[in-house]
Length: 383
Ligand SMILES: [Zn+2]
Image (cartoon, helix red, strand yellow):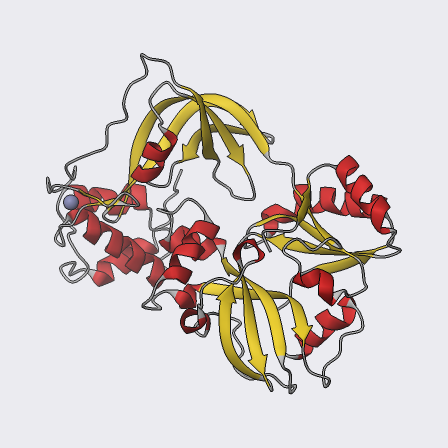
């Protein structure tokens, strides 16, 4: 629920906790995805709706039934709702959706689609349930999670602690050591007590739980240039920025996702920008602080540098429409080689030269599969 109460610092959290007097705190990951509610009647799935801003949203049932973790029929004769977050995992994002700003944006795009395509790329993780039947009664938050697990729902990671200090330490631990090891994005923790208050849960902003957000590391730098990284037929902008230190790593490149983002930010070469690093590996440009009058416009490529075809700019992606574009073939062959699991086949030292001098054009036209596999056993260093 994006609408819950938020705190961002330990002192704010202490203030919040003082009003509650909890003797036990339940800590859960705050999943950074799309919140939905799934309705069940007598244990049978009825429909799923998005839950933006605590209001009832769109019916997304047709997409939800294809998602990983969807359960059409429960073990129990349950009538009520379960709440889940729709998440796109990092590895699928890297494979297919790097033209989107982040996993959540990509997931939102898929959820909104009417044709149901790509819904199978999404995962559901469950964190809450509201029972309307006398048959299933939850006496505490812990019991509720246990029940979700018994129904085979994949549930959010949960921990219980006894003091405010332990909550603060837990957040610190997740923020610095655990978050980066997860296969999905989280942007904080949800903290609640063990008692269930159904009336409070129905509020747009439940008062008995709070989102304890992670602190976002941001730093100011300058946009020096924009490079266009070509993957298959897609041209993706990459920001080259003045080198800065962000969360202990040296950063000189930042993600820009697509041409629309450049427009939305009003970004120019020479703009002073804010970059951040959240759970993601690649830092992002968050905002433009200042752009001087002598800053230069960012040139968006018009022509495919490989086949001279006019590129198509859809805003959310820029691509070469030529089906015969060698870049497409290159991408396919590279994927194919990865799939074959050929070891020691260096892309830089072997695949690219083969393409560049015309020896290799496509999978079907590459006659020496044996030769390729032979290459494969030649150990060549990538460095
Ligand atoms: Zn092309």
